[in-house]
Length: 427
Image 1 (cartoon, rainbow, N blue to C red):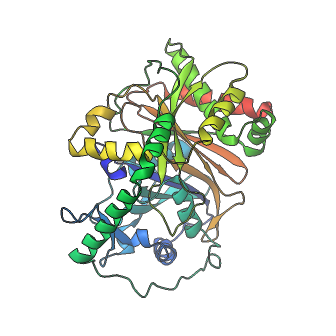
Image 2 (cartoon, rainbow, N blue to C red; image 1 turned 90 degrees about the vertical axis):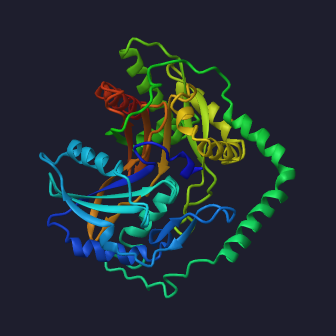
Image 3 (spheres, helix red, strand yellow; image 1 turned 90 degrees about the horizontal axis):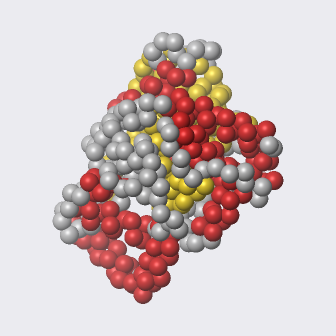
């Protein structure tokens, strides 16, 4: 489904920006050697996604015998003045640049020239390689302390590169997959019923100016708040931090639309639901379904209302929506209709993702990680999305927008920060 969804530009890629406190610049060779050692335990980061002959199944991951860390790790200098805005502009350019399909689908860019004696490491990978939860598991593999601190070494995989599977092996594997699908047919009606319930909003969508086909450019802005204050407010209202993030995002969009002269009381938000119970860097891939949920954008008890709505959706089976979405997306892609459909959808106005990150401070090659900025993609008839990450006592929300369709992005950023400040104040 992820591959089928990757139509048009920019590509379906996600990224994480690690802000490092470095009194002296990190050497590129040192960074390259560290990433090479630490990624040796991540098979997907040394594999290519290779199509197979018709009838032998879907594309498969195969070890890249020509893998070279130097093709993935590079250094650039941030434009002046080297502040957060300049860094996020650089990150937008990197995250929207297509990764070469003939090599493992990731890159790591070391960014020098930042103010306040800082350096950034921007790690980008295709969404088919990992989802957000898997990305956090990858992060844990890359920072110090995963296996013995900043001078960590990892034993090389003696079986790398594994030989390419034969046509007979691929045919056998495809046959097993089809037999499992046949065995699951008796459960299909129930799963389809649950998927329809999960995907069908309880209200009609409200037309608004957020529904525009996104162009090729992206711009990122951020808002921050103390995690303890947001958590206290959420728990006092019977809600979660995820509910608080949804409340802040929808409230900010309400302010943006009001600034545009529009009054919208409800927005349908796409909320990713992972089928994972825990994050693992061993089993990556994209294991996320998407649930459209109508949420209120205003009102004195909006957080409590959002909490009640999300509790109802959480009671359903995790990730069951992919039962319908995946085959429909693949069929539309085969018919060359997917781009036409997603660029004309009027149901979902935005997407909001919350990732529960590390509680304690991290470091990379001894340099403290001062902050982590998560970045995701927006596609189709949607001009704004949000992704939030909690890290070391701070909740950070990144707004991803098409600056040509959302020229009033500063209004949205200010409104989002105001929403977070209000949540903290009420804690």
